[in-house]
Length: 373
Ligand SMILES: Cc1ncc(COP(=O)(O)O)c(C=O)c1O
Image (cartoon, rainbow, N blue to C red; front, top):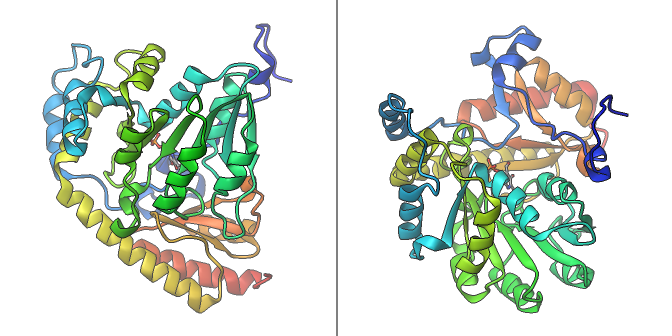
């Protein structure tokens, strides 16, 4: 029981705080290591840092912060609309795509309604839905850890208002084929909003990417969400965007606070969008990292999930001991116990030297704690 005199709704009392990883300085202090000795492979951030062009743009802008930012992130919104060939009012900016998925839940959910999401989805989906007093339905995944689209359709009932889908998916690294998605969307009743989360889409091989913009044009109940936190290297700036038809976004803008994306972040994201060479280099580092890590896992005989994002979820056996061992040696990876996968860990793809350090430590840990799979 939380000690407070104020009254809160029962669904707020039932929630837990989101467990984010600690800042690198805190982790280092706890371990008695220097921050530069810590390898953070825990939050699927960009291991290559950020674009030099972003640094320059932000340094300049940091000298004039006396005015409010543009309430709609006008210039960034315009640049995103131009990049994707959609009208400007088809784009809304958020304080990270996390804010957008929370606002979307607020827009469509209330007590007596339901949100559906696949098993092994981003943990914020049920959180934001429950925060609105709504019920959540988690639909079991397929045997290969992917979203079971038919089972999601079967789970729809008269209370359903929102479906979350992620492509490629965190934490499984799996992806959905375009034909399957289109077949699915054709059958979702048009009053149900499909939140199509593409936080990792840049990492998906181009041949496997679906034309999500065409989906938005075709289906007035589909919203796609993307972020600058991953491929663009701006997790700290907190910028994400939604693309959807104006009918949805006019409603979303009623829920959204003005000035939700601060000036520096708008400027950072605009400069990042223009530096596609940085994204290209990031994708190359990631591709090689996935190749290296998966090869190492193959040699170690470890089972792993999909290779379509900037992380790999791998079955290591005694995960708690291994995570502890890695942490004491300065490498931080994600525990998967909250997904009922206690033998698995999720590791973000790092730079070549970070990946090597992780693998060397993993080998030592496996030797020490035994291969108990
Ligand atoms: C699937 C998915 N969606 C959305 C987000 C949120 O990203 P952000 O709020 O940084 O844009 C994450 C972050 O890890 C994620 O994994």
